[in-house]
Image 1 (cartoon, rainbow, N blue to C red):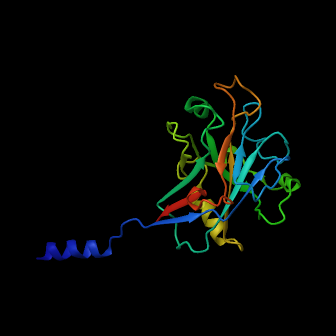
Image 2: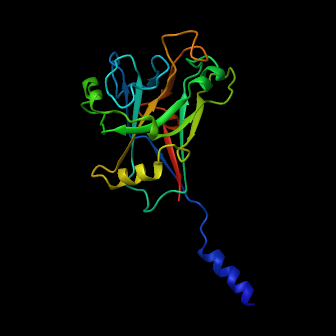
Image 3: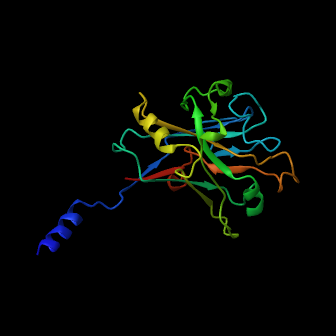
Amino acid sequence: MGVVLSILALLAFSKAPVPISLAAAESVWVYPLAGNPPGDEFLRIGGVGGLATPEGKGEGDDWSYGYVNWDVSSLPGGAPKAALLTVYNANPAGFGDVATATAAPLQVRGLVGSFTGKGWDYSLSIKIHPDLAATVFGASVPKAWGDSKEPISISFDLMKGPGDFKAYLAAAKASDAHTLNLAFTSAIDPNTTDGGGGKGGVYKIYSAATKTANLKPTLTLEY
């Protein structure tokens, strides 16, 4: 009888992971020739000369990034047990094949500074820019896809590192704006067709501005 009561007590106090999904609130396409950075349906991400960013500097007009933020004010206290980020790439893909993507995966990393879509101007990218490679929370490539023209999903385990996502999220929750800001980067080069371990291209992912709700960048946390 005592063993049964102990098991029942254990079950009563144990909790299964509770997933919480958050759709992106805002995004901007960071590129000098972007016509409507916060309103464009797509974020186009590409690098230069095998580099995903100029590493900690906001300068470099040839790079193309995507900045995305989420309102994290509703999240519970404590650190999540798991963190998954899902985005969708346009199909047909601008990078041709999985091998090309594997040579230069899409990265999610910390952002120096914070942004809002309203009032965004490219000149702000000098001080609001992707953080160092040490803050990359995850890198990923799409799985094989067919000719259905359906958007191509790309998922990231943000706990994979090397960046400390738990600490970064905690800082975002504690900030005055309660906003999580992330940067999408990649070394894939739009200006080359042969080099760097694969052909060139660009990632073209749906932004927070897309009218198709289930294609917005989505953060799923388990507590």
